[in-house]
Amino acid sequence: MGRPLVSAIFFTRGFLQMKLTAIAAVAALGAAVSGCATIIEGTTQSVSVNTTPAQGAQCTLINSQGTWYVNSPGSVTVHKTKTDLDITCLKPGYGPGHLVAKSHFSGTTAGNVIAGGVVGIGVDAASGANFYYDNPIEVPLGPPTGESVSGNDAASPFPVSLTCSGAARRPEFSAEGPTGFVSTKVMFDINTNDDAAAIRVTQGHDAHCTVTARPGTTLASVSLALDGAASWTAGGRPAREIEKHVEVVDSAPTGSPATGQRHSFTVRAKDATQGKITLSVPVRYR
Image (tube, rainbow, N blue to C red; front, side):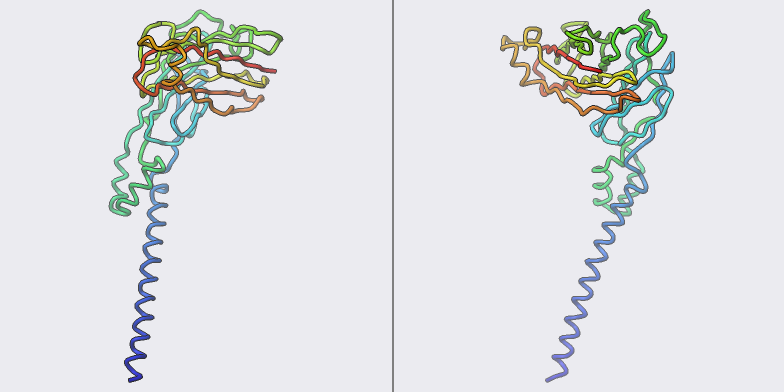
Protein backbone atom coordinates (compact mmCIF):
# COMPACT_ATOMS: atom_id res chain seq x y z
CA MET A 1 0.00 0.00 0.00
CA GLY A 2 2.91 2.37 0.77
CA ARG A 3 4.76 2.06 -2.53
CA PRO A 4 1.97 3.32 -4.84
CA LEU A 5 1.46 6.34 -2.59
CA VAL A 6 5.18 7.23 -2.75
CA SER A 7 5.15 6.81 -6.53
CA ALA A 8 2.15 9.09 -6.81
CA ILE A 9 3.88 11.74 -4.73
CA PHE A 10 7.03 11.65 -6.86
CA PHE A 11 4.96 11.68 -10.05
CA THR A 12 3.05 14.75 -8.87
CA ARG A 13 6.28 16.57 -7.94
CA GLY A 14 7.83 15.71 -11.29
CA PHE A 15 4.76 16.90 -13.16
CA LEU A 16 4.73 20.21 -11.30
CA GLN A 17 8.44 20.69 -11.94
CA MET A 18 7.92 20.09 -15.66
CA LYS A 19 5.08 22.64 -15.73
CA LEU A 20 7.18 25.26 -13.96
CA THR A 21 10.09 24.61 -16.35
CA ALA A 22 7.75 25.00 -19.34
CA ILE A 23 6.38 28.28 -18.00
CA ALA A 24 9.89 29.60 -17.41
CA ALA A 25 10.89 28.61 -20.94
CA VAL A 26 7.92 30.44 -22.44
CA ALA A 27 8.71 33.55 -20.38
CA ALA A 28 12.35 33.42 -21.47
CA LEU A 29 11.30 33.03 -25.12
CA GLY A 30 9.00 36.02 -24.82
CA ALA A 31 11.81 38.11 -23.36
CA ALA A 32 14.19 36.97 -26.09
CA VAL A 33 11.68 37.78 -28.83
CA SER A 34 10.93 41.18 -27.28
CA GLY A 35 14.64 42.00 -27.33
CA CYS A 36 14.98 40.63 -30.85
CA ALA A 37 12.90 43.40 -32.40
CA THR A 38 15.09 46.12 -30.92
CA ILE A 39 18.36 44.32 -31.75
CA ILE A 40 17.43 43.45 -35.35
CA GLU A 41 15.51 46.55 -36.38
CA GLY A 42 16.11 49.30 -33.82
CA THR A 43 13.56 51.89 -32.74
CA THR A 44 15.57 54.92 -33.94
CA GLN A 45 17.16 55.96 -37.22
CA SER A 46 19.81 58.51 -38.12
CA VAL A 47 18.70 60.62 -41.09
CA SER A 48 20.83 63.08 -43.07
CA VAL A 49 19.17 66.31 -44.21
CA ASN A 50 20.40 68.41 -47.12
CA THR A 51 18.79 71.52 -48.62
CA THR A 52 18.92 72.83 -52.18
CA PRO A 53 19.95 75.11 -53.79
CA ALA A 54 21.78 76.21 -50.61
CA GLN A 55 22.86 74.66 -47.33
CA GLY A 56 22.94 76.25 -43.88
CA ALA A 57 19.18 76.04 -43.26
CA GLN A 58 17.55 75.39 -39.89
CA CYS A 59 15.37 72.31 -40.25
CA THR A 60 12.61 71.01 -37.98
CA LEU A 61 11.58 67.34 -38.22
CA ILE A 62 8.29 66.20 -36.68
CA ASN A 63 6.43 62.90 -36.40
CA SER A 64 4.03 61.42 -33.86
CA GLN A 65 6.93 60.52 -31.54
CA GLY A 66 8.61 63.92 -31.23
CA THR A 67 10.37 66.93 -32.74
CA TRP A 68 14.03 67.15 -33.77
CA TYR A 69 16.25 69.94 -35.12
CA VAL A 70 19.26 69.96 -37.42
CA ASN A 71 21.14 72.46 -39.59
CA SER A 72 21.74 71.40 -43.20
CA PRO A 73 23.82 69.54 -44.12
CA GLY A 74 23.58 67.47 -40.97
CA SER A 75 22.29 64.29 -39.38
CA VAL A 76 19.88 63.71 -36.51
CA THR A 77 18.53 60.57 -34.83
CA VAL A 78 14.73 60.30 -34.93
CA HIS A 79 12.31 57.81 -33.41
CA LYS A 80 10.77 55.61 -36.09
CA THR A 81 7.00 55.29 -36.35
CA LYS A 82 4.31 54.52 -38.92
CA THR A 83 3.58 58.25 -39.33
CA ASP A 84 5.42 60.34 -41.93
CA LEU A 85 8.25 62.70 -41.03
CA ASP A 86 7.24 66.32 -41.68
CA ILE A 87 10.29 68.51 -42.42
CA THR A 88 10.43 72.30 -42.65
CA CYS A 89 13.70 74.13 -43.42
CA LEU A 90 14.30 77.84 -43.01
CA LYS A 91 17.13 79.90 -44.48
CA PRO A 92 17.26 83.71 -44.80
CA GLY A 93 17.01 84.77 -48.43
CA TYR A 94 14.76 81.85 -49.40
CA GLY A 95 11.17 80.83 -48.89
CA PRO A 96 10.57 77.99 -46.41
CA GLY A 97 11.38 74.53 -47.68
CA HIS A 98 8.95 71.74 -46.89
CA LEU A 99 9.00 68.00 -47.50
CA VAL A 100 7.14 64.98 -46.10
CA ALA A 101 9.37 61.90 -45.78
CA LYS A 102 7.12 58.86 -46.08
CA SER A 103 7.29 56.14 -43.46
CA HIS A 104 7.97 52.76 -45.10
CA PHE A 105 7.22 49.30 -43.75
CA SER A 106 10.39 47.25 -43.38
CA GLY A 107 10.30 43.80 -44.97
CA THR A 108 13.04 42.52 -42.66
CA THR A 109 10.41 42.25 -39.94
CA ALA A 110 9.40 39.00 -41.62
CA GLY A 111 12.36 37.42 -39.83
CA ASN A 112 10.53 37.96 -36.58
CA VAL A 113 7.59 35.90 -37.83
CA ILE A 114 9.85 32.85 -37.79
CA ALA A 115 11.60 33.74 -34.56
CA GLY A 116 8.73 35.14 -32.54
CA GLY A 117 5.51 34.85 -34.49
CA VAL A 118 2.77 37.23 -33.43
CA VAL A 119 4.78 38.37 -30.41
CA GLY A 120 7.69 39.45 -32.59
CA ILE A 121 5.47 41.41 -34.96
CA GLY A 122 3.63 43.05 -32.06
CA VAL A 123 6.87 44.22 -30.46
CA ASP A 124 8.10 45.75 -33.73
CA ALA A 125 4.77 47.45 -34.38
CA ALA A 126 4.57 48.95 -30.91
CA SER A 127 8.17 50.18 -30.91
CA GLY A 128 8.21 51.52 -34.48
CA ALA A 129 11.09 49.18 -35.32
CA ASN A 130 9.45 47.84 -38.47
CA PHE A 131 9.31 51.26 -40.17
CA TYR A 132 12.00 53.44 -41.77
CA TYR A 133 12.50 56.71 -43.66
CA ASP A 134 14.43 57.20 -46.89
CA ASN A 135 17.95 58.48 -46.31
CA PRO A 136 19.46 60.94 -47.14
CA ILE A 137 16.60 63.46 -47.27
CA GLU A 138 16.88 66.44 -49.63
CA VAL A 139 14.58 69.40 -48.95
CA PRO A 140 14.10 72.01 -51.72
CA LEU A 141 14.04 75.56 -50.35
CA GLY A 142 11.46 78.06 -51.57
CA PRO A 143 12.28 80.68 -54.21
CA PRO A 144 14.62 83.56 -53.33
CA THR A 145 12.83 86.28 -51.38
CA GLY A 146 15.26 89.15 -51.86
CA GLU A 147 15.92 89.28 -48.11
CA SER A 148 19.41 89.88 -46.79
CA VAL A 149 21.17 86.57 -46.22
CA SER A 150 23.96 87.88 -44.02
CA GLY A 151 23.83 86.88 -40.36
CA ASN A 152 21.09 84.90 -38.65
CA ASP A 153 17.69 86.26 -39.72
CA ALA A 154 19.39 89.60 -40.36
CA ALA A 155 16.29 90.93 -42.14
CA SER A 156 14.21 90.68 -38.97
CA PRO A 157 14.40 93.48 -36.35
CA PHE A 158 13.60 90.94 -33.60
CA PRO A 159 15.64 87.95 -32.34
CA VAL A 160 12.71 85.57 -32.85
CA SER A 161 11.09 84.09 -35.95
CA LEU A 162 8.11 81.87 -36.78
CA THR A 163 8.18 79.11 -39.39
CA CYS A 164 5.15 77.09 -40.52
CA SER A 165 5.09 74.10 -42.85
CA GLY A 166 3.25 74.89 -46.07
CA ALA A 167 3.45 78.66 -45.58
CA ALA A 168 4.17 80.72 -48.69
CA ARG A 169 6.06 83.27 -46.58
CA ARG A 170 7.27 83.46 -43.03
CA PRO A 171 4.88 85.34 -40.68
CA GLU A 172 6.46 88.58 -39.51
CA PHE A 173 6.46 89.74 -35.88
CA SER A 174 5.60 93.29 -34.85
CA ALA A 175 6.27 95.08 -31.57
CA GLU A 176 3.54 94.85 -28.94
CA GLY A 177 4.27 97.13 -25.99
CA PRO A 178 7.68 97.29 -24.23
CA THR A 179 10.88 95.88 -25.65
CA GLY A 180 10.78 92.11 -25.64
CA PHE A 181 7.07 91.84 -26.46
CA VAL A 182 6.15 90.95 -30.07
CA SER A 183 3.25 89.22 -31.80
CA THR A 184 2.11 87.92 -35.15
CA LYS A 185 -0.94 86.26 -36.69
CA VAL A 186 -1.11 83.05 -38.72
CA MET A 187 -4.08 82.06 -40.90
CA PHE A 188 -5.08 78.46 -41.59
CA ASP A 189 -7.60 77.27 -44.20
CA ILE A 190 -9.35 74.21 -42.78
CA ASN A 191 -10.37 71.66 -45.45
CA THR A 192 -10.58 74.43 -48.04
CA ASN A 193 -8.35 76.61 -50.18
CA ASP A 194 -10.14 79.92 -49.73
CA ASP A 195 -7.14 82.19 -49.13
CA ALA A 196 -3.80 81.98 -50.91
CA ALA A 197 -2.11 83.61 -47.90
CA ALA A 198 -3.43 80.96 -45.48
CA ILE A 199 -1.79 77.65 -44.64
CA ARG A 200 -3.92 74.74 -45.78
CA VAL A 201 -4.88 72.10 -43.20
CA THR A 202 -6.87 68.97 -44.06
CA GLN A 203 -7.61 65.67 -42.40
CA GLY A 204 -4.34 63.76 -42.35
CA HIS A 205 -2.27 66.83 -43.27
CA ASP A 206 -1.42 68.94 -40.24
CA ALA A 207 0.37 72.29 -40.13
CA HIS A 208 3.43 72.50 -37.88
CA CYS A 209 4.77 75.86 -36.68
CA THR A 210 7.88 76.67 -34.67
CA VAL A 211 8.90 79.87 -32.90
CA THR A 212 12.71 80.04 -32.89
CA ALA A 213 14.92 82.36 -30.84
CA ARG A 214 18.42 83.33 -31.90
CA PRO A 215 21.27 81.97 -29.77
CA GLY A 216 21.65 84.16 -26.69
CA THR A 217 17.92 84.97 -26.55
CA THR A 218 15.53 83.42 -24.01
CA LEU A 219 11.93 82.64 -24.95
CA ALA A 220 10.19 83.80 -21.78
CA SER A 221 6.72 82.86 -23.05
CA VAL A 222 4.85 81.87 -26.21
CA SER A 223 1.03 82.05 -26.25
CA LEU A 224 -1.66 81.02 -28.72
CA ALA A 225 -5.05 82.76 -28.97
CA LEU A 226 -7.86 82.26 -31.48
CA ASP A 227 -8.88 85.45 -33.28
CA GLY A 228 -12.67 84.97 -33.42
CA ALA A 229 -13.26 87.95 -35.69
CA ALA A 230 -10.93 86.55 -38.36
CA SER A 231 -12.17 82.95 -38.07
CA TRP A 232 -15.23 81.37 -39.64
CA THR A 233 -17.09 78.12 -40.16
CA ALA A 234 -18.82 77.11 -43.40
CA GLY A 235 -22.54 76.40 -43.46
CA GLY A 236 -23.73 79.51 -41.63
CA ARG A 237 -22.59 78.26 -38.23
CA PRO A 238 -21.13 80.72 -35.69
CA ALA A 239 -17.46 81.61 -36.20
CA ARG A 240 -16.45 80.17 -32.82
CA GLU A 241 -17.94 76.84 -33.92
CA ILE A 242 -14.70 76.15 -35.82
CA GLU A 243 -13.00 75.47 -32.48
CA LYS A 244 -14.97 72.23 -32.22
CA HIS A 245 -13.51 70.98 -35.48
CA VAL A 246 -9.87 72.06 -35.12
CA GLU A 247 -7.26 70.93 -32.61
CA VAL A 248 -4.25 73.07 -31.71
CA VAL A 249 -1.55 71.09 -29.90
CA ASP A 250 1.09 73.13 -28.08
CA SER A 251 4.43 71.40 -27.45
CA ALA A 252 6.91 72.02 -24.66
CA PRO A 253 9.84 74.35 -25.46
CA THR A 254 13.13 72.72 -26.47
CA GLY A 255 16.74 73.83 -26.76
CA SER A 256 18.59 76.35 -24.62
CA PRO A 257 19.35 80.08 -24.80
CA ALA A 258 22.94 79.24 -25.71
CA THR A 259 22.03 77.19 -28.80
CA GLY A 260 18.64 78.72 -29.60
CA GLN A 261 15.27 77.87 -28.05
CA ARG A 262 12.25 76.60 -29.99
CA HIS A 263 8.55 76.37 -29.20
CA SER A 264 6.37 74.31 -31.56
CA PHE A 265 2.65 73.85 -32.10
CA THR A 266 0.48 71.84 -34.49
CA VAL A 267 -2.85 72.70 -36.12
CA ARG A 268 -4.96 69.64 -36.93
CA ALA A 269 -8.38 69.17 -38.59
CA LYS A 270 -10.57 66.80 -36.55
CA ASP A 271 -13.08 66.21 -39.36
CA ALA A 272 -14.07 67.45 -42.84
CA THR A 273 -15.78 70.67 -41.67
CA GLN A 274 -14.62 73.66 -43.72
CA GLY A 275 -13.59 77.01 -42.32
CA LYS A 276 -10.68 79.23 -41.34
CA ILE A 277 -8.91 80.00 -38.10
CA THR A 278 -6.48 82.79 -37.35
CA LEU A 279 -4.15 82.36 -34.41
CA SER A 280 -2.53 85.29 -32.62
CA VAL A 281 0.94 84.37 -31.38
CA PRO A 282 2.21 86.74 -28.66
CA VAL A 283 5.86 86.15 -27.71
CA ARG A 284 7.93 87.54 -24.87
CA TYR A 285 11.73 87.27 -25.03
CA ARG A 286 14.70 88.60 -23.12
